[in-house]
Length: 580
Image (cartoon, rainbow, N blue to C red; front, side, top):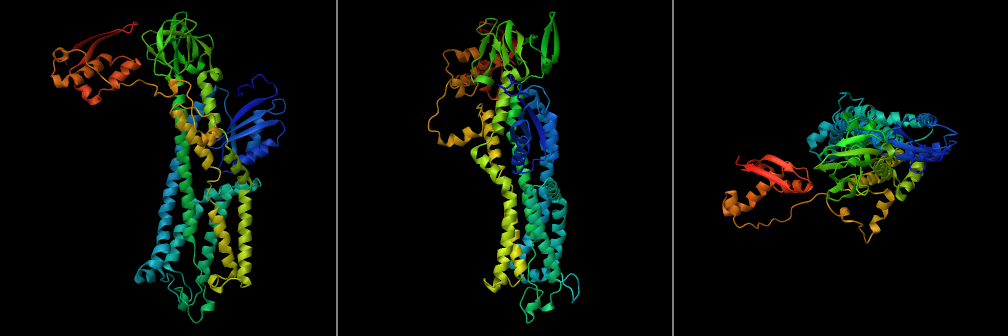
């Protein structure tokens, strides 16, 4: 796929790659850096939420498959997108992404729900029942399940271990796999932080259970005794590792749902393009796939059908709804007149006549394809804040690990030299006391919001704008919009809803009640019903507005129905009604 304005340059080509495995904010800067160092690559843009990488390169020095192989060497799944038009590529890619995303949402939802079901009992027992529960409940939780005076394992500790283990090694297996992949390619991701933080908390908890198992009977309830120096009073942190994995999975579930919602506007725009077209060949009509149309083909567009491609009217006269492009509700007259013969794919022929349209633009040259490329470029563009986040993310994981190691060393040294009160570390000892601070640093740094919040906000903003008929050219306009104090609109279509609406009804006939056969108090409703019945079979926007003002349920029970409908070019309507 060649970008606009670059098609005539032999030293520049552009390819789009569908990339799998973009797990966190550290992936885009790694891809940009690796491809940027490749000879022949001119420009790289990573669209995380669209799961695509757009690369401009010199075709004389390398090809698209060379770039795809480079992406695979980095540990990602990469395929070159097809060479169809932007709208076709986007529609096919959107369908595939939608199916994959729906499966991803269901998978993350199940895993998050299961993790929360397993983790919440640990939290309730450790954080609520043990410190604040009734004495009988506390004694039951601290009961020795081993039934031995030489070995000790509390009931709540065993339960916590059994509940936390499947969360750590089954539901959390994806984080270990991601960390191993990152390690193989000499880097670190947010999966690395999650794996390190939860493993440290889980490992320390297992050590705490082993150390506490040797406690004397007098100190097994975490109370002091004469032999307190031989007792281990450290707590386990199974609830920390379990809840952390549960919340990360919940965050990934919400993130996957957000991705799906932000693509709905683009999907709605793509679905405006009709899938089939009626092509005339030697005065014979043949229905073909709209994607197979070529320049010069003549299509028949009957009233009520969408124009299959950009073209010019060569025969016929009618009106076309172009509100999808202009926002204007007023139908636009179209004929073979050179001043009013241009029509665009996705617009609707409102009638009354059929149009013969000669195709002049297909694929990437079509107006709808250009709009699709604009929206995709806008959703993949980076704001200044996002660019800063990418720079930070490049060194974030390594920085967190370094800070965690420093925290362990500093606090261990402070405890060993008794520079801090002994009561702070007497339960665990200096080494484990310092380790807890390192675990805390890793756990706090685990959430992956750093590089996902801004691109998600851009996706949501541009998606909502597209749904409301406003095309936003990237994240930068959104970023500076907060400082806007004055907005200038260039046409009324920017401000209208794109469809007419009845705002007031006036009756001028004095004998309307007698003509309609109803009481004087019911004249207004009867007139609306009669008008709606007359216009029910028309596709004209004004007719639809008259029908929409009547409540659907009430209209179905009224005494007016259409028997004969004729629409004329002079915009006159002849209607015969009969009593239902």
